Length: 235
Image (cartoon, rainbow, N blue to C red; front, top):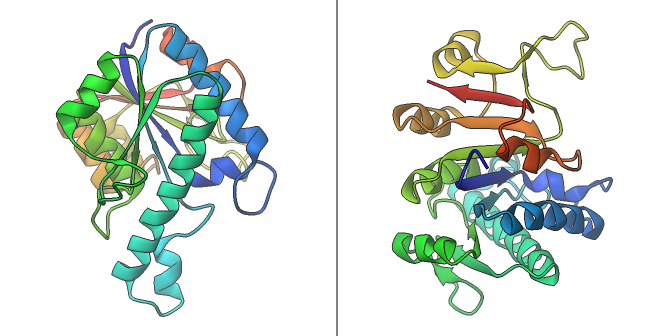
């Protein structure tokens, strides 16, 4: 495998499958199977998942609610998704640990960097829930931060598209797909890969990002083998 330790970033919307909201159990099982393949290959896996299928902080702000209050609600949504993914992984025979940036001792460990690294070394999948534990930061920022803290080799961002394009491929037939692109080019072209805080963290810490289609079976392990799947962003 090209990468030994990874952080996999999934969106909450990815768990909806064909539904309009909530969690699709079939999609959970698919993801668990894909993750099991790479764990069985010896890759150390950490995961951050969003909460957009349940609630987003920006929704609260649009509805007149205080943004801070809404962001904490969004963090709870990520914990629901994290627990669902944890259950699916354990049903597939994978040892897991769920760590939360907000204290929830009945359902998750508190985030402790050294403990997370030790779990990874013991071939346990570590799921980081509740974002960074702070409002105004997205789960993209949480993924970048946690990846840097655990010394991950790469962030894998699983999406519905097969990489980064010059425009939205679902709207523009002439959109060009990039196989490799630099952080500076992403800035210059104003491409939407991650939010700016998360993206800058990766650039400054020389942490590559691979954007790929998580919904195509086998793509995850192909990425880890170094095959030409998705788009890699690096210095």
